[in-house]
Amino acid sequence: MDVIIGLEVHVQLNKLKTKMFCPCSIDYHGDEPNTHVCPICLGMPGAMPVLNKEAVKAGIKVALALNAEVQPFMVFDRKNYFYPDLPKGFQISQYDHPLAWGGYLTIETDEGEKKITLKRIHMEEDPGKLSYKGSITTAKYSLIDYNRSGVPLLEIVTEPVMNSPKEARLFLNKLRIILEYLDVFDGNLEGAMRVDANVSVKGGGRVEIKNISSFKGVEKALTYEITRQKNLIRMGRTVKRETRHFDEANNITVSLRSKEEEQDYRYFPEPDLVPIYAEELIEEVKQILPEMPEEKRERFKKQYGLSDSFAKVLVMDIKMANYFEDVAKVVNPKLAASWIVDVLRGELNYRSKDFTFAYEKLKPEEMAKLLNYFENGDITEKGVVEVIRTKLDKGGNVDKIIESKGLFAIPKEEIERLCIEIIEKNKKAVEDYYAGKKQALNFLVGQVMKATRGRADPGETAKIMRIILDKK
Amino acid sequence: MLTEEDVYKVAELAKIEICEEEAKKFRAEFESIIGYFNLLDEVDVDVEPTFQVLPIKNVFREDIPKKGLSREEALANAKHVENGYFKGPKIVE
Ligand SMILES: [Zn+2]
Image (cartoon, rainbow over all chains, first blue to last red; front, side, top):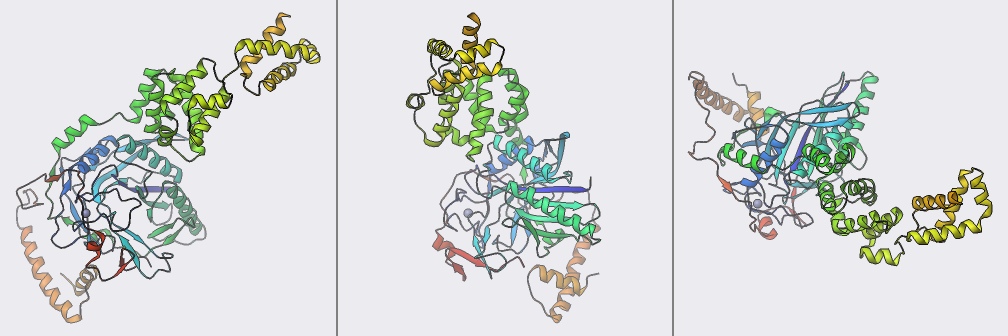
């Protein structure tokens, strides 16, 4: 193991309605800067923070789901630093009495399951957002938007137990799945998850890459950084301990001004907030903890008779799992699972969409209707795919699409009639068939397909064709 | 033993500029303050730490949005403003 990676993941509890310590709305995406602010999140003198109860409950939910030890006694502290992203001169965070200690989640690597252990989880307020006119290097000052300032944030700190950028990505994916199951997090919102990554290569110092703002960015930043460190070591130079910044546009990391060391934050208990005795809250949250991916996977296998591989894929996304269950209410669940996993998921991916889009464009009832047609032989496999594509791209009514595109399958009698007709017209191919040439059957079936412009089911047609030929 | 170097470091962390004379003065003052804390070492440590002197706990607010300040109000006292943003120093070198 010559690479060691630890992550600090900042997760916005963005399904809440208000900020951590003030009642400003956190529904600010796309709004003008500094329009979701008040004296508390602007750090004005005399303004007093009051803790959002639902934020604490959401935090407890996450900690429980990550198998962490939720603390019955929590304290908020001031983390002192002078950056303009927080106007008070400190961030309200947690230090030695955080939300939870320990915990883990399991990822599936090529070598099997791996437990990624956590050090701690704490609650804090999100800082405001800095931006720069032009580039970060040429700008002379920063522009500050405090809409984000005070958004409830969890910091989830892993132990340094990951050994490749890929493991880091798998960890973040799994974390995202769990957070979305808990309904406390929407990963599609800009800035929902930001990551600081610590990485060291054997023989070098530990480097921290700050504020990587996308899932994909983490793997890229780590891959770049590991190559950079390995090259330095190969050339006999030292990798110095430092903080770097990930330049997303150029896919490189650049050295950042060294930040204050930990003790320089001068943490002390936030005098404007009182301690939390959380025992009752923890019990309350335990009662409402939803079914988690592993449990759902087992239930899908038992309840619907799905194979493990289908169940595993379906539970990877809570929206896909719900979609499946909605369809499986009215359709053979195994059929539903295979169409959703093998076809619909691919069609959505191809369009860079997820199952939220499917819920809008191809409702589970519509998908169910389509699959019922398929099961009754009213429409071919190819026809189903075409309807799915049309629904996703243009919308419309399922029956009308099938009708207007002539996708209703040809009745069996019609296929039989066509087979007889084709046999009569293609004597040579029939002779070849009796002579044992397999391609001859394909040719004859192809003629039927051609005559129906692809509406006949090829498997079904081949079966009928063979029966007729063998009877002769 | 507190040095003048320590005083300069604290001043830097607090973003305060001090002169040599002040550093001397503060060093002596800091030392007497630290002296008080040293008294604590003489006390039996078998007591609960105090995080908050108020006799209350679990003060919460429901998750219900309320209207805050308008942007004009929010920016009213700021000296440096641009396009609805506060202007601040650049933090990355
Ligand atoms: Zn506010």
